Structure formats: C-alpha cells, structure tokens
Length: 141
Image 1 (cartoon, rainbow, N blue to C red):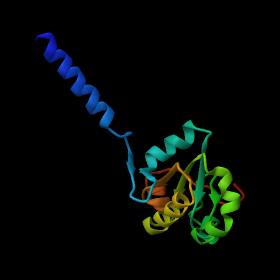
Image 2 (image 1 turned 90 degrees about the vertical axis):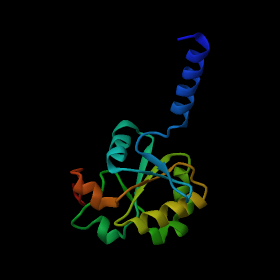
Image 3 (image 1 turned 45 degrees about the horizontal axis):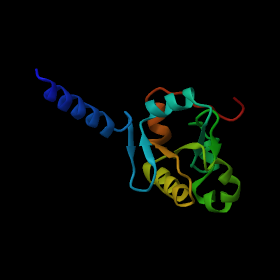
C-alpha cells in the first residue's frame, strides 16, 4: 500500500474514533446524559467525584426496594426549593434515578436548567438497577 493511502486510512480511523461517544453514554435532549445501570455502577465504583440523587418520594427511598448506597434523597417535587443547598454539587457528576423514566427525566431536566453541567440519568431507574442484580440498601443498613 502506498503512503498517501496509509495516511488517509489513519486519518479516517482517527475521525471515526473521535466521533464515537463513550460506550454506554448517550446525550439526552434535556442537557443531560443517559447511561445504563451497568455503566452507572462502574461510575459509582470508580469515582469519588460522583454524587447520586434518588428522585423518588421519601417513602419510596425508605421503602422495600431501598435505594442505591450513598444516594441522597431529592424527591423531584423538592428540587426547586432545595436548589440553594443542591448547588454545592453543581460542578460534580450527579447521577439521578427515579422509579420510572418520567420522574428521572423531569428531575434531570430541572437540574440541567438550574446550571448543573454533569447530570447523568440512570436508564430504567431503580427497578432496572435491581433487575440487573445490583444491590440496594434500606434505612438502617
């Protein structure tokens, strides 16, 4: 193979790699990313710069399904009034989940509109997390 073709092939490969997004991460329309629970689990294990917000009502956070260990309860309906306190996490990667897609989308959108730049929504919420075999904790654990 001659050298111009090698350069062209190398340039095309470089562009293809640069155009790919991180595996498991897809950008949402609302200014946040979406990841599968498997990716979220790895993010939690690999980084101390990640905070997790559980967007479900407090009764569900403390209920039989439990919550992701270390998650902070931030029910969707309380985000706006709690923004002054939550702004401390604005420059941190914030993983959010709810009981269903609507709940987590709404919460992620509110946080993105409030200036949070690193919002990552866990696809499928707590139920998909549990279905894939990831642990949850209940109060007192």
